[in-house]
Amino acid sequence: MKMYMVTHKAVDFIPKGRIPIFVGNGENTQGYISDNSGDNISNKNKNYCELTALYWIWKNSSSSDSVAIEHYRRFFMDPQKIFPTIISQEKINKLVSDGKVVVPMQRKWAISIGEHYKREHSTKDFNNVHKIIMEEFPDYIEDFDFVMNGDKAHMYNMAALSKDLFDNYCGWLFKILFELEKITDLSRRSPYQQRAYGFLSERLFNVWLHHNIDDKDIVQLPVYILSNTKIKTILSNLKNRMVRRREYVPKKTNVGLKQ
Image (tube, rainbow, N blue to C red; front, side, top):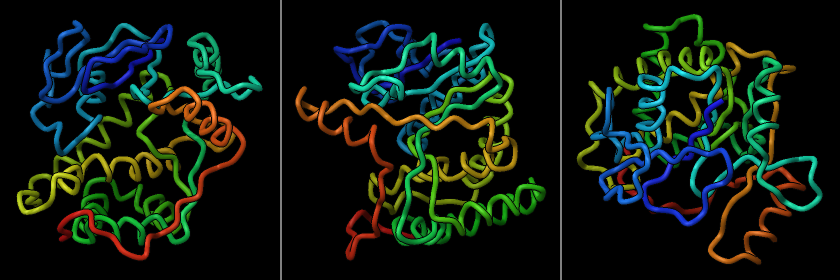
């Protein structure tokens, strides 16, 4: 297994077994793997976020049976430890070698995933994705409707799975997003809303998961989140370990122009 840690800057903490992959336009002074090498879409990072790392892994990493994607501040947590602990590579590898897909624990919204996306981001993008799936992957449309009408989803673009499944997911996901990119103008949106394809992919991963993976083969793990102080990291991860997070729709939003 190769466990990739996506980062856009130099970091002081790299858990054992993780491979840093650098994304974005910053200066890669640490000699990490860079998403602008090989076959890449690094120039799309401001719109695709960590997906430029996923694309690089899909196209350039062929020497592993399985892969894991984490982030420089978010890692899978070991549910068997009383004290919050980042899970070891050995334990993740054992889960995946048993044919499982490891994902973050579901988050629950006060409204449906689809309605939340349309309120916080772009209704036009949402409708265009629905249309693209209807045209390109019609057998996924029931899964799309099921996920978007529900109120739970696995977020963060984190997963551990076989390389074959990962490649299948990337082929499906990037076909949809590249088609959407052809008909989408992000230039008038705020920098936050220009991250549209990254936001959409978090929801679309759940659609792919629902279509391809049986519930019994999905392993949900809490997420270990690094904070700016040690005590805050400990306290927040004790909470993450104990309960599933619920996100409520805010009364007001000021996150940028929507279309």
